[in-house]
Every structure is written in structure tokens, then in C-alpha cells.
Image 1 (cartoon, rainbow, N blue to C red):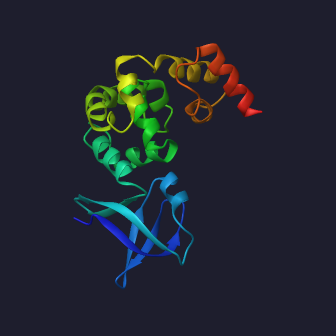
Image 2: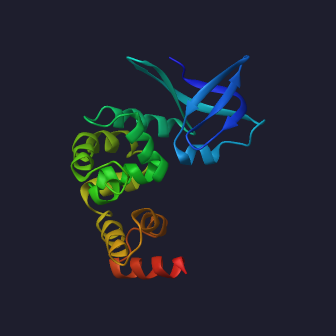
Image 3: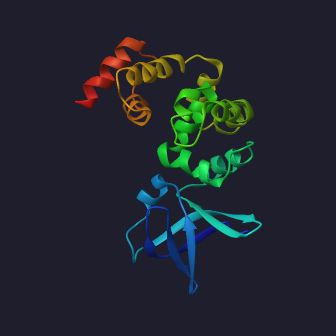
Length: 197
């Protein structure tokens, strides 16, 4: 198992990068958000990796953090969720947002990812909710609150309201993400719209 790569970024494109380590150029498929965090070509980088073995070959996936890789591996354990779909989820949303969505049962946010239907999103929530709460609750107190419904209702409803107003799921998530989760829904929507201008 290749746990991580440290080397020079030789090439990067929309799907991943080539990282040269010990004289070997490794092609690494990466989520869009991890690719943005990668330094420019010619710079040294470190990525956390997962080697995916399949019948017709090997694929090496790279991530900006161990948390992102752990979430990717959890998603691979869900029926009908392969590496491509898991990468799509992590390309649209940072790990903390995915964990909160799973803990809160926010199928609407997850199913906004291209190729991820409502039923698959609900299956992900069913299979992963307890796992993400157990794994991330200590690091992210809001995750436990989402799971028991203390904090999550307002952000979930605010995102839904913003989408009804014509915003994309991604934009709604970005606008609501940093707002205090204990705000009333109306105030949350109002502040989100103010931030958009």
C-alpha cells in the first residue's frame, strides 16, 4: 500500500497530477479541492494516497489530508459508490461539509453532486451516519449536534430555502457554511443573501 507521496509536481490537469518521487513519476487522481491546494508545477508536494486495485489495472488516488482520504475510503464501502463518484463528492464539498451532511441526513445536499442520485445519497447516509459521528464527533463538535438534530435543522433548512431562491446547492453550502448554526433560519438566509452581494 502506498500511504503517501512526497515529491515534485511535474504536471497537473483537471483530473489529477503527476508527482515525481525517487525518480518515478506517479499519476495521482485527485478531487478538485485537493488539486487547488497542490502547489504549482516544479514545487514539492505531499499527498496522502490510496491504491485502488481493479481487474484491468491499478489507480492511485491522492488527497490533501488524511481526513479527506478517510472519508473517500468510507464512501467506497457504500454499495454503488465507486472511486469516481466518491471523488465527485469531495470535488464539490470539503470533508467537513460532507461529514455534516451525512450526520444531519442532508440527502438534498449530497444528491446535488453530479451522478449521485437521491436513493444513493440516502443509502450513503444510512450506511455512514453512525461511522462519521463516531469518527469525527471528537474533532468536530457540530457533527454530534447534527446527528442528534440540535444544530443541523437551521443550516439544512436555510440551504433548502436558498436553493428555492435559485442558488445552486454548492453556492448555498458556501454561503451558509460559516454562519453561526444557532441562528434562526430566516436570519441565516438573510445573512447568506447579504454575503452574496
